[in-house]
Amino acid sequence: MRKRAESDAETYGYILNPSQKFLKALIEGLKRNEERYGYPSCPCRLASGIFEHDKDIICPCEYRDPDVEEFGACYCALYVREDREKDGIQVQQVPERRPLNKQQRAYNITVGDKTKTSTSTSTFSQESLDIKLRLHYCKQCGYVVFREDPPYTCPICKAKKMFAEIKTVTTLHGL
Ligand code: SF4
Image (cartoon, rainbow, N blue to C red):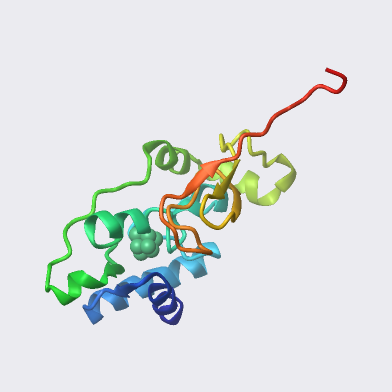
């Protein structure tokens, strides 16, 4: 888990939290969540245990890059901007960026719903989860993703805030 985080930090030009004690606690939290849910959800947030509801908070979460850019660290302060460390700047408290509707969608799930979803995939519908998937493309490299929200940083060319939605057009034959 730590190696994965180190390599990811290096790829994006971040560092891991320099406090070894704090870092160890976060890595252990990620490991525990991976054992519990099958994916390493954020150690600082409550996960629902349902992948579709939690995928935005699987580490590294969708909110990491804008948080690191704006506040110098991710919400948990696992990933830190390199200049923070060099300049000896303390990591400030990072406000929750995860939209309320996503939090509600995850936390409103009852145990009954969860059992139903995990035992019968045929009853699992995108509509019931209120997830609207859309096509987005990176304006710099053309990488295309099909998801609810576009990534902040393109995983291929690392450009920031370069995704635009691809509007699909329905045509009627013969018109
Ligand atoms: S806030 Fe940090 S530790 Fe938590 S999921 Fe996002 S990147 Fe990982």
